[in-house]
Image (cartoon, rainbow, N blue to C red; front, side, top):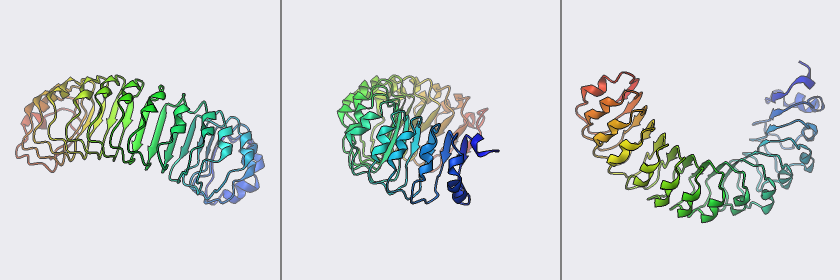
Length: 331
């Protein structure tokens, strides 16, 4: 195939010299990946690829990007992860059609206000910021926000300004509590808060009626947050590695729940009401202090996976062994 006809290209380490030598021939590229090539200088010929929409230059050794990049006016997705960049290069803010910006594993000293120019940005992934970057709160089109390894003691109440946000992930950020204003983020569908220090959730979380997935793996919950029992669209709950002692009877009201993971808590019993979860496919309860399992689990006809390892269960009801769709049983 002629180079000018190629629209998608992933360059390997063996091909990089040839690619750079012939870079002028790839003018019609729409998607380009230079992942993990350890390049130290950005190939300026890329700036002439006027049709480029997706560019992955992660895992290289770029310390700066050329101003000529502003020519990439059609660029929608840019991955700058794992480069020795201490800030997002200023030219990135000229790429006003960007919809996704990824900046993993780089130490960001600051986020300038110019990020507000990215008015079409829908997905933003950042890591190792010094603090919560309040500058991003003006990105009104944002639908997905993922922050990792960032020093956030309290999530700012102004986060409610991100009214279109559907996916909020704050991972390993040292968060102790969420603001009550999170209840105003009514379009949230995913709330992922891995490895923080959260002991309880605000009551106002019961307003998130569109929430489908909630994950607080590795936090400090001592009680199951009953306020989420009002969220009838929940499909997945993961409270693994907390300190929850009791599962409320109201769990049976979450009729759309498909995945319930409560590994490594301090549960001593499971309420019989769990048998009402007709759509449940995955139930993970390993690493608790259970001595028996209610026979009502035998009503979960759609259950595919049941994990009961590392408990104190002596006998398993026959009704559970006869579940018609059970593919994986760990006891």
